[in-house]
Image (cartoon, rainbow, N blue to C red; front, side, top):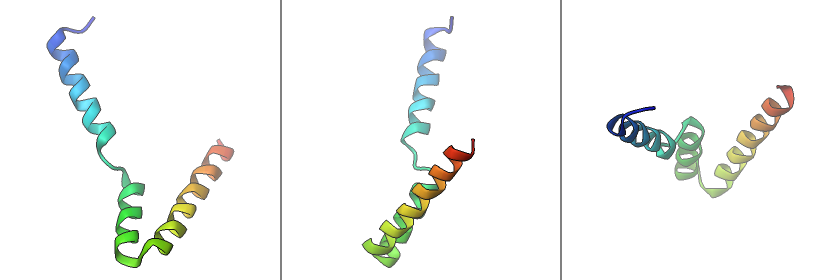
Length: 58
């Protein structure tokens, strides 16, 4: 079993990783800010399609 200090550090690092945006989120935010809501939604649909293809292929 982990020591309490090690467990706390692990939990803190894990929380930071979960809360930080991934590359898809950064892409969607930047696309929406620079080109508008419509293009952001189109990009979102592309990301979702990519995820679905990946899920079906594996």
